[in-house]
Length: 140
Image: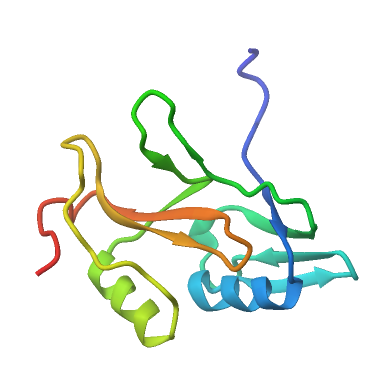
């Protein structure tokens, strides 16, 4: 590939069964804001957190397929997006206080994995939140 091109990820397109519920969830969890919408889409931007670096397009669907998968080689569940946070415990506590369903923090199951947790959005899409800096201080 010619290095004269400037490339970046701009928009993640995410299936949603209920646009209002999903939009509210992404606002509460990641601080995204609605930039535009129509009957079948909601475009969300990271105005409060520009370091996220991408936009999210929620697209209405009744299709059963969701984002995320289990590795057939390792049996590990993978997310469609990984979000890095500088204060994992603080963010985890803030999500719980906001009423977001989050699993308890526990040590990584593999020695190569960072400390973190998975989230399912209202449509069942899997995202991961983790911190490299807090890998060794599991749930206390």
